[in-house]
Length: 123
Image (cartoon, rainbow, N blue to C red):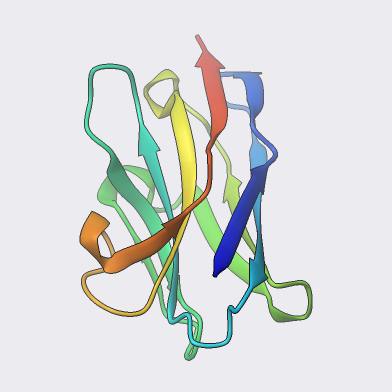
């Protein structure tokens, strides 16, 4: 079993920065992808960024390219999402996810999910 614990959410003004962390516990050896998704009120859950743990390839949705950076610390079994130049439209619950294969921004590619951390950006 794999457990994911997110932290680092909060409230910031537009233009500010936050860093989200996702610590993975349990049998993480065979995980291939770590991703961040977000869900705003009355909207579906969308993929924000993902990282292929084996080769380090990264993927981003267009709206965050150049502003967000996903990275990993293998020694700590932790994945980070550095979010800069935040906008009000980035406001959402952010979820960490871990999976074994598939399209990086597909919900079905991920088998394990964290409980989420709230990010609120005010204008």
